[in-house]
Amino acid sequence: MLIGMGAIVMDNAVIGSNSIIAAGAVVLENTQVEPGSIYAGVPAKKVKDISQEMISGEINRIADNYVMYSGWFKEPDTP
Picture 1: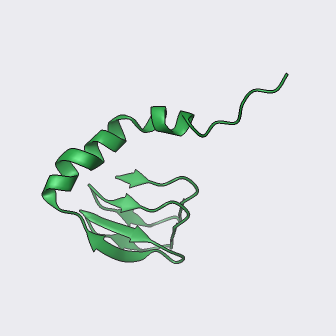
Picture 2: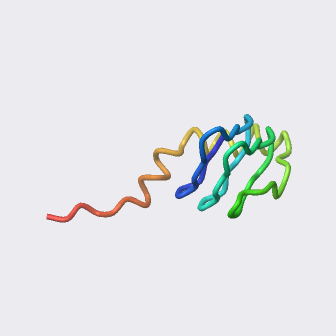
């Protein structure tokens, strides 16, 4: 599962494996995010299924490097 920056996942939401929550999305209480899907919007709704090729390639690459990618958007330290 990948959750975009600024996304909000409310209590009792269930996020399926190999799914993506878009940046800024709001997943409401009791929402069931289907495995292998992309959810976006406010409230978050399913926008697309993810192919097995994408799961094994792109999603795993993003997940493995998420900390590095998030560092690109850090505010510079001020003295």
